[in-house]
Length: 154
Image 1 (cartoon, rainbow, N blue to C red):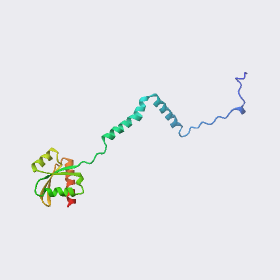
Image 2: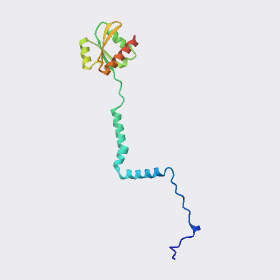
Image 3: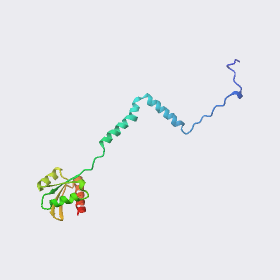
Image 4: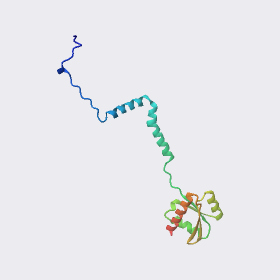
């Protein structure tokens, strides 16, 4: 027997450390495989890192915060129209309501065309009549907002 074929005696063998298959072993192997794949295929880096950023920026611009819409109303010209306008301007909701005094025909035409959400016609000093389109949600909302504003101003 030659020197190369001789087996060393048992007392000279180094003990091998026991292999540990710990809790993270599978995860680390999977992570290593994903990193190799990421290095190999450059388009994966685009879809994982760049595309979500571009998508977030695009949606951020599309749905950025805008100021609240203002209710546009027309007050029919008459003896009590200025009183109604002053009540609306003194109400707590004055920032949300844009009101102007116009003639009856122009007010009804503006309501029909969508220029005004609501037409307020003063009947007497303590009574008003609302003209609005119940099929338009903004018109119904305007009716509620203006009614609340007039009630709170009184």
